[in-house]
Length: 316
Image 1 (cartoon, helix red, strand yellow):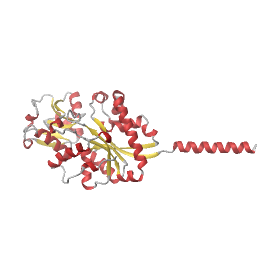
Image 2: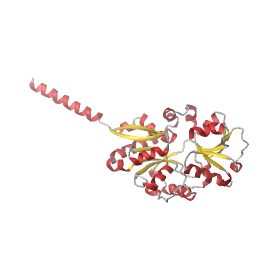
Image 3: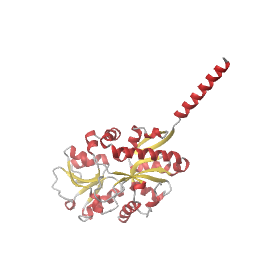
Image 4: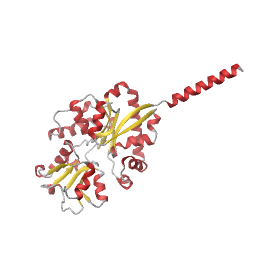
């Protein structure tokens, strides 16, 4: 009887120990913006790819790229999945060793960037970018957004004759409808939203092709905090594996993932189902010269005060 009880106690102890090991998860804080770029993060969460890696992910929402990158650099989050690569370059001017980029979002050639659009009112007489001379164009807040708009428009007309005004993203479509601006230059889905509401029409899709960046435009970035990478390299690798697995899933299941996009971003599902996706680019697929070429044209336009070697900002 004593042997039986001993055996039972041992089995119970082993069962509790094994169960405890199975339940033990490593917590990772991931900052995100509720935008299309963040879709791999949402898919990894919904499909259990983080859980498969033994990760308990705490998603921390942000309302702007500046605040999410500030949190990343300060170590308040472990990863940023994701925000504009141009915002990372601003941080790199003063804190070049505080983060590493592990995934990009954008285009890999000059055949058709799907992110940016130029939109005018539905009843506008503006026919092409040349007609924007003397007009007021809305852009996202920030020096790089204004520079991109100025550079693209400047290929067709003197940008000095165009008024660029920074407008918070939620106010772009209302500003167009109320005639505060004549056009806006922005990422999707704002063009699609304006068109779906009957308030706007596309003046031009893919205006960044006018910049002739043959290696494409890496517009967005997913990144790790440098201290997190140093102190928890295995956890960082697991996050990268889960995100890349989600990316593979997106590439193979386009229609299935779009309701996930609507759920996490608040986009109307009809818009989410039709929204054109740019490319999510793994590091092994990325030409680092593309990032440098993109930075250089913005630097030459005055968006940045210091030269940055962007090729040193990546996590291999």
